[in-house]
Image 1 (cartoon, helix red, strand yellow):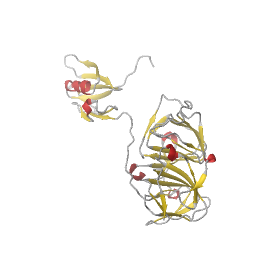
Image 2: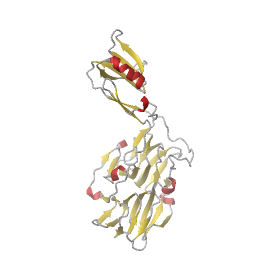
Image 3: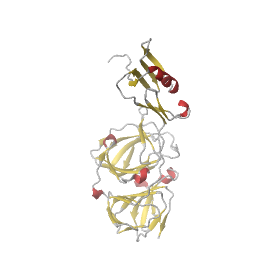
Image 4: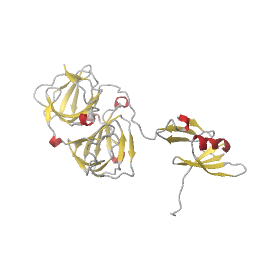
Length: 363
């Protein structure tokens, strides 16, 4: 390798170069770098917006599609969103900063059982993913059961997510994670959880063998951005810092307080996530207590529960009773009458609700 610069450029075709010159220089604001031959130009190179183009008369290549990213959508190309150059190149002007896509929840009653042998898919950083809500309620939520079979160092990079809400709940084993402005390494043990506020930089560092976590993301499809210039750990920072109105919440199982659950016959430990997200989401861990649990309804937009331990029967009006065990998950739509029956002594449930300030009514 030499010390001289190396450039790369995209080759685009044209029938008549002179027609393309004003479009690429004036409309798109690119800079003309070279052009030849002088008497009848047929080749020109342009640069701009992190891109270099070579437009060549008669080139045997497709006209291509360029995406220009800017947060000044109205100030670029007179506010146009879609353009077509004289040579046929399609140009889309899109936001530079990823945006959270708000979706309307498509409510349904859904049960995902581990006995159904849903496939594990290898995803980012070699992690195995199992989808707990296949329909994703119309794109409003993704619930993933994630495992790393071998444990050890995780080949992760500093990154952040463009999300409305995200939860990492350590189900089995332990995992070491670094978070922006949160000091040194945080080790999540089974039963611990954290929220990942929108845009917080983080990196998974190491995990125990057979680590398993439950990850909740709202909406289902969200952008993950790698931050190549950010280093973690970066110090304690401001503990009260907010990202899009949410603070970082680290809930530790061993210091939790158990209180009566909103439904009789159960006790629960609240994770403090409803307060930390200002009501965006509420997360509780639920165990059996004395008495029989009555039927109930709720008014949450999304109500998802994962069975972490034990067994139970889920009775829902108009549905076949479902016998559930550890590893199963279910979604209850608002206003459906349900009852948790035949609950084992060792039952432990992870309840995820959006919004966090919903109410449940015994019936």
